[in-house]
Length: 183
Image (cartoon, rainbow, N blue to C red; front, side, top):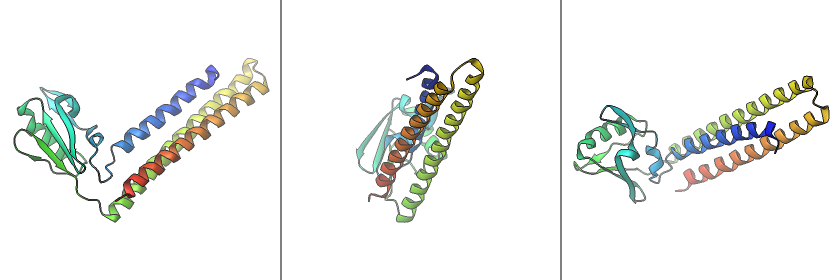
């Protein structure tokens, strides 16, 4: 792969990585510890990710168990979960926090699939914008004594890269939609 196209490939890869992170945070009926990835807790005045101050496990398919390293953090963690967009109330016995995920309704599943598709479309737009930026940069190379054939090759390779990444996004969205719709 040409160095001139490698930069754009890396940007496209980052876009897909970002999409996958976003999709991992969407709960699909089953308990998934990644839904807690964005939650931070005030740990001695410093916002710290939940995974760094507690042990997170999935003892049952619909339950996440959070065991803080320090008992004093239980209230902080509960508060952080309540103000997050998870929409689940934490249950605690003072030592361990349990998040019980309710069964998703058919309507909610369809809403989540729409949301997944929107995120996928946004990622595709980002990929296409990267392609446009690349093509603009390649056209500017014509002024720097780069042959038209070489520029055409660069544009073709960017198009192939774009197609490959869009296909990856489609596959990822399809898999996540299936996971959400599976009861």
